[in-house]
Image (cartoon, rainbow, N blue to C red; front, top):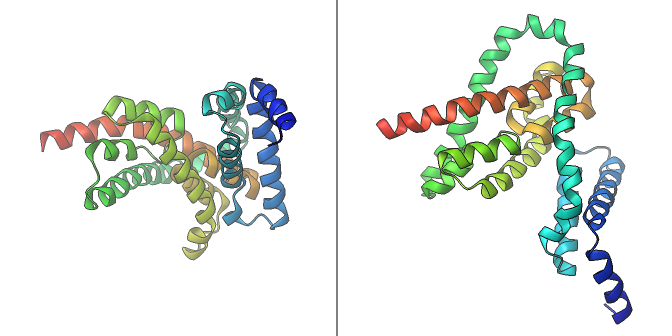
Length: 241
C-alpha cells in the first residue's frame, strides 16, 4: 500500500462499521457469482463470502476482533431470523400435523446418525477425545452447538468452525444426494437438509421453495433440541460402558 492509502485504511479499520460493510459487500459479491452460475449449489454464497472475508483480513492484517466489532450486528440478527422461521412453518401447519409421526422418526434417526457417524469416523482415525466432543454437535446450529460442546467438555470455538463447514458442505451436496435417492417431495427434502445442515442448509432450502424452507427450519430447530438432550445421555452411557 502507498502511505496515503495505508493512512486511509488505518482510519477505516478503527471504525466498527468496517466489519459490517465488508460482510455485506462480500456476501453481495458472492451472491452475484452464485446467481450468474445459475444457483449452482457448489458455489454456495456463504462459502464464497467467507473466503473473501478471510482473504481481506489476512491481506490487510486486520485482527478478527476489530472485524467482529462491526460484524456482530449480523450475528445479532441470527436470533430474530431464526424466530422468523416460525411464520412459513405456520403456513405449512396442516401438512405438518399429517406428517408428525414420520418426522419424529426421521428426526431421531438423523440426529443419532449425525452424532455417531461423525464421532465414529474421527475415532477410527485416532482423533483426540476433546476434538471428538467438539465434533459431536456439528450438525446443530452454531449457538446451540457451542453450548453443547462447552457442557460436554469440547472446545466451543472448534465446534463453531465445524458447524460452518458442515452447513456449507450440506448445502452444496444435499441436492445431489437427495436426487440420487430419488426424493422429490420438497417438505421431505427440506426437513432432511435442516437436520443435517442447520441454518446454512435452511437458507438454501428457501431458495428452492417456501415449503422446503419451512420444513428445513423445523428440522434445524428440533435437531438442536434433540441433540442437546441426547448428547449428555450418550456421553454418560459411554462413561458407564
